[in-house]
Length: 107
Image (cartoon, rainbow, N blue to C red; front, top):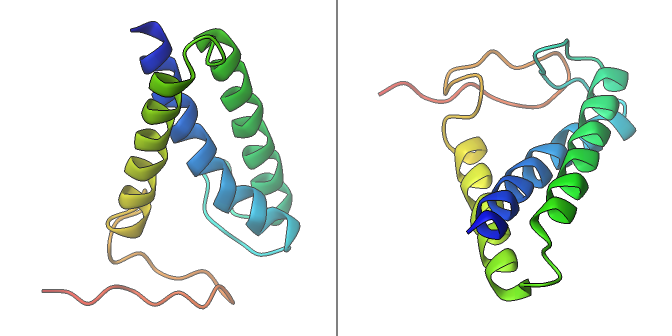
């Protein structure tokens, strides 16, 4: 059971690390709790990837690969759905300068 829980959280961290890391290496702004600059995002993404690996090791994912993979995949899907819908900053967030995002339509 611990393998499943830790792998699920590893998937969440991996999915959340990706946009931050990409925005950092492409020198684009993207909001984090610590600021929205590229360097902050690069460091946040890198740190989340490190946490992902520590969780995967702690989960002993190689000993039970099928449940570990399934749980991690669900974590990635869950974080993806979260960011594709409401996201951390809500539906109507104001786009940062130059990020090309549009606020969601209000219903």
